Image (cartoon, rainbow, N blue to C red):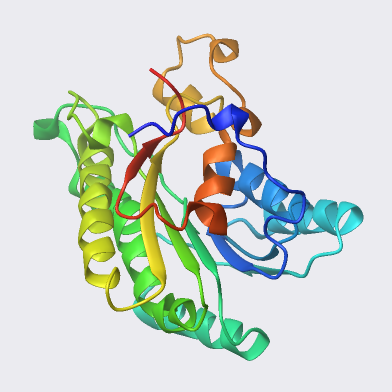
Length: 253
């Protein structure tokens, strides 16, 4: 699904004021830009990433430019167990009695090779970061999301999560599962809570992951993260209250 004329939608500068949003994978790439843009529009943020140095750099940058409240939470999703997610939720609950948004953005690429040559260790790592982490964050944060009058969950999908592509292995399979989780969870919650669930396919974006996946590609042919950020703002905000269970393309094809 492509929401027509995203670029024509006018978003007020206080769009996210009063909202508390957790963003995983916020240390770099699209996640980092989401954090910067959500701060600009007034949200309080909980930033999750495995790289503490990157989180601290982002924290300092946001504190210099915006007055919103920011918590940084380092967590290595490849090593994390459910108890680690439970500890994070307890820490968040001590600071906030609710959260209004969750952006499941963290992901790793894994190996690009035929499935018959795919290592089991890489398979497990990709699924743990791309799928298990999204499930565990969402599951454990659900009580806090339900305490909000209007909350929104955004999963991050991919074009290879809609049509399988040779050599994309566990990454592609994890994104198919994310699409399914979006559909299942949105149906389960639509008549029992105020929680909306959608996913976004960001498309080809100028990030380190994209460069790793396509080393021969000219990076400048792809948009910067800031150029595809409007769908995230729109879906996390109350302007999109009627949109639920959708898989959204951030770019026109």
